[in-house]
Every structure is written in C-alpha cells, then in structure tokens.
Image (cartoon, rainbow over all chains, first blue to last red; front, side):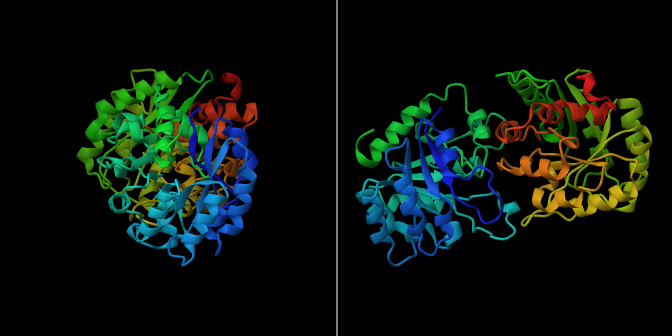
Length: 237
Length: 253
C-alpha cells in the first residue's frame, strides 16, 4: 500500500461520516499517510483542531498537515508553531476560504523555509453535490503561478481532476491521485509527470478502496515518489 | 484482479462518437475485474433526433450477440414514434430495458405509453437522475420527477440512476415506492453514499452499476468500503439485477 497523502479526520458539517475518526485512519493506512483535520477547515482558529491532531499523531505512522486560511493575519505565526509541534505539511483550501492562490505566496514561502510541503486543495467534494457550501473553483494555472513565486517550496496539487492536471509541469509541482477517480484506467490518459504523482485517497470523504483499485499494476513507483517528495521538502526521506 | 464473485453491472454506456473504443474498454474492464454481465445503452447528444437514436440503438444492439452484454434501448420520448423505437428495440433488436437520458423530464406525458409498455412486459426503465447545484440541464430529471412517474405507473419498475445524483436529495423521495430501484453508478466515490442508501431503502432495491466507461473503481470501491453483510453484498452485486431483469430470485445465482 502506498503512503497516503490525503487522509482526514473529524466531522464534515454536511453529512454523517461513518468512518471519520482518526482511529479509522490508523487502521486503514498502517503504512503511513499525511492526515489533516476536517474540523480545522471551518474553525475560526483552526489550531483548536490542529493542536490535538498533531499531538495524537506523534509517534505514529501518520504525519500531520496543518490547516490555515492564508488570509488570517496571524497565519505565519501559527505556521511556525505548527512546525514546532511536528506538522510536516500545510494544507490550503483557497476555494473554501476565499482567496486567490497567489495571495498565499508569503505563507507558502515560509512553509518552504520550515521544510513543510504545501498541499493546495482543489475541492473536497464534487461541486455538483454541494448545496450548502459552494466552493469556488481553484484554477490549476493559478497554483502553478503560486509555485513559480515560491521556488523553495514543494507544492502538491490535491484532488485536481485528470483534465485539470494534464499539461501542468513545474520544478516544485506534484499532484496527488485523489481526483483521478473518474474514467477507466485513468493513469493511462494522464499527461502529468509520472515521477511527480503521489497517492491520495481523500478518505473518509472518498473511498480509499476506489483510489486503490484505480492504481496501475506497476504502482510501486509511488513509493519512490513519496521519498522524493519528502526529500525535496526537507532534505531527507 | 478478478473479484471472484458474481458481478452484474446494470448501468454502463457506449457513446455514439466512440462506440467501438468504448466497447473495447468495457470488455477489458470485464476481464480485469471479473464482471459477468454489463447492461449498456448508447448515448449521443442531449437532444437526439430520430436518426441519431436509430444509430445509437444499432450500435448497442451490435453488442448483444456477446453474452457479456445486455442492453437498454435508448428512447427520446418527446420524438414522434418513440413507442415504435421501444417496440423495435425490444421485439427485434433484443434489448431488455428502456433508457431515458436528458432529452425530456421523465414525468412528461410523452413518457406514459413507454412506461405502460415496459410495465406490461416486465422491462426496467433506467432513468438518468441527477440533482445538481451547478450545470443542471433543462431535460435532466431528478428524483422529484421520477417519483411522479413511478406513482403513475406502479406496475413498472424504475431504476433511478446515480442514487438520484445526490443521494441526500433523491433517496428520501423514493423510500415508500417499491417499484423504484436505484444504482450507485457515477455518483462520485463518496464513502457513505451506499450505507446511507442501505439505511433508507434496505438491500433489495439497490443494484450495482458503474457508468462505465465512466469508472469501475468508483462504484466497486463503495462496495468494498461499506462493510456489507455477505447476503446484502450478493444481492447488490448481482442478485437484485437478476430479479430486476429476469424476474429471477437469488436462488438463481
């Protein structure tokens, strides 16, 4: 099983998650993963959800991603605090928090200096099904522009669709597989550097089993990519 | 990676513009995943004319000599001669169900003769249903429309596709209608949709579907993640489809 860059725990305000607890993530991804808090997306101060998450992950196979709204005036201070508490990545939701990706450049530059990767989340759910919260589309080219402004930071395009990823390349751009659930044998039609792909399931919002079923038979390359990503972030695998 | 259990896909397609390539993809998926039977319809544009409908149905009928495939005849109910298209599809071309897509809402009076025919001959009606917050098409039915149609035609079995598109919108509308079944094809790979459907409908009216060449993993992953009881899993993966298409009970598995 590959390292899972898209794990979440907590509550999702719009529907009941039957497997939302962190204990489910430990059970389904013993080989490791990067976990973020769902509650933190909606908290005025996401640290109220992130601090206990990072504490619970300490010494486990899962790494923690801190959630921040790049528009918050104290976001940079909180990012430093999160790094000290063991966070290994920053997860951003410009479509929910309502800012242009490029506006997050100062925060993302700091993430790079702290050795954190930055996951830019395209969507949490299919836009056609969001009738209480409508996320703004996150333009992939805008994330590429953000990455170009922050050459010392590694960016993970997270839950972008296959059609959105095609043709995107950059020295510090990576993409996860969470959005590749549409189509038969999707990896055969993906025009994105294979050595920059990382596995992500988006469990428990999406089915981890679906993500695993879609992997090509030679999915071992994802483990090498995982090591390469972390090495690029902070210099060791 | 064959799944080693009977697996019937009640909802798949070939597209008019890529019919041969789609059929090849479906065969490849059947071999890889161990799908025993795939019910297909052929689709083209949103508002097809008679010639396009005829071409679509000829393309789908061309697959039916292969035992892997069963088929739905695609009909645009608002077109003159729609009932003839259905009759020809069933009585001459070998289709086993009716497919309605987005040319008109499924509770339009034009649909009634089609439903009468399907009820009389025990043919399921697969209705595309999707309640969208963005991009809803004018002729795109939701569970609201399907409910009206199903109430008017209690002898006809309707297969509400995609769990109604948004299961939280659609499923509560059909829980009391024994002639409405549902599939979870193309409804995204949301983790809890299938358990929610089971809570509301029970295991006897849910059938496995994929929307291929859309995706297989999206639907089958939901089955794997739902932790189904073995008897419910058998019903959903094949037993219910056999009952729906063939009127056969689970003992026929």
